[in-house]
Length: 543
Image 1 (tube, rainbow, N blue to C red):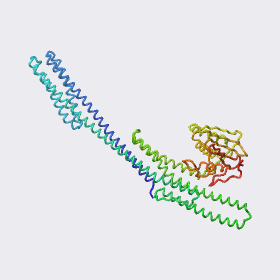
Image 2: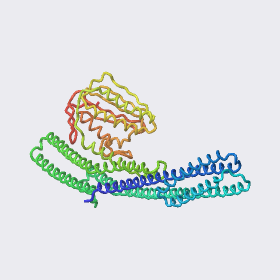
Image 3: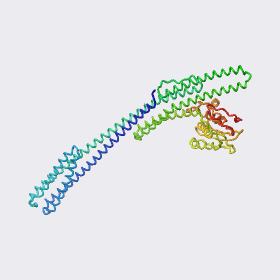
Image 4: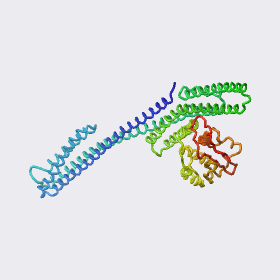
């Protein structure tokens, strides 16, 4: 058997692997770019250092030139030149050692140029420091000035060549950083396209292997509940959906067999009753009612089994799909920019899948809530308080829908023996239907009063009303005129009313609104919830 969970796990693993891969590559690329930036910063400092060396060399040349112009300042110029020269040679020595240790391809050439620069500076010392003392002849000073100018041009050329090497290093580092960014962009685009493909494939597979089979099963269950016990769900799926279909068919077989057995038993009972008690018409009528109750109980019990199986077999893969869908949505937002068109497209696809999953889940919840009616917990309660709480719940919705809510509560109404949660649920269902009947606004009135030892709760609206042909079927399961839902709202209200030994009725006229009256006994026992509610012995009179 194939498992939908396995497919979802594989898809999630692929997405997770893609996210982890992209993250790891991005981290390494950012780290590499950071390293290149630090190297570029270092080279910028080196260029600035070479600039300072050039400034010192120019200062040295100026001092030397000043010495040539003013021989009287021989001692001062010589000391000043010596100081600048020593500092310049010390900086050159330190920088040569630093460049020799960097290991760049240009380091050897730079060290060579620095050696030449050092030799030129040492030549300046020999040029302007003759053994015989200060220069006295104008011709000698002219020769030395020309020599000094040539040495200055050599220093400028050497420092310019050194800076050119540093600019080459910076250009190479920038090129490597651009290469990392280009690779990261290509990887991002590739993974984005892969993610989009996976989302599209997941949507198609979900529609084909989950949504369509569930819709088909719902239609088959509707026909089965309508009395067509020969209907069967046909599928060739080998996943959990296929298991669910086979389980449904087995249940349908069981229902049909039980119905056939029950029918045979009924005929046998009828034959014996006709043979032995023809004169006891009242007992015969009672037996007929018992037979009908048995049929209803059998159908509701089977419906409960179907609800249990449907809830287990469908809700489990739906929950797993919904959880993984939320993870996919968060990871898509984390990977892609918030304003990208690709994220918007992926978000739209994910939202479609999300809505379909929630819609299926709501159908299942509505079906299960009706089939598995919970037991009641009755206690003496104030019906007026329950009505006010329900009105508070709908106050915000009424304001948004343009519906005016008003109450007419009888303060003399005695406390009723009821299950507050169930009665509140019945009122919520009635109010929700009233809002649906007034899409353009109107008036919703909730009233309470006491009549014939019964507490009456009335819910009236000014909506479109209910047609006479529909009025006879509104409390039947699966009957609805709405585009959504399975038609269990009013059926649940009726079960709650009968569970309390009461009843619910409706007075409506097309175009003039509707009034639903929930009639509950002031005293009496609440009937425990079972496969089918049976009216209590103490029932309210319907005047």
